[in-house]
Image (cartoon, rainbow, N blue to C red; front, top):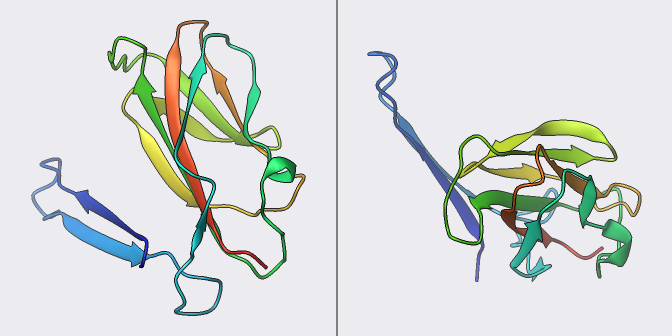
Length: 141
């Protein structure tokens, strides 16, 4: 069974932009073979502005190789009450290098390496409660 990701963009910012929908099947590096492994779907509650490892690659059952594919999905889903506060951002970092900030309701899906030293870290801007949902899809070497 294939794992696919679909994004649809619509906007009224520009008359010339009619929007688009793109779908990608998550495949092993350089092939048309579906990725078959995942870390599983998880949630992490954060209540401190401290940086923490969201995914510690050395702890995952992933055997890294230079020629493997992996994708990570992360979403800021708000707080315990289900409120999505657009003002609370969470930095996403890889080895302390900032990739971007996910504000309430924002999400990302990006390719990542699965090398043991390349941890995915997060750091909320405040001590307010924020919950992230995340998963990583990967291929075993």
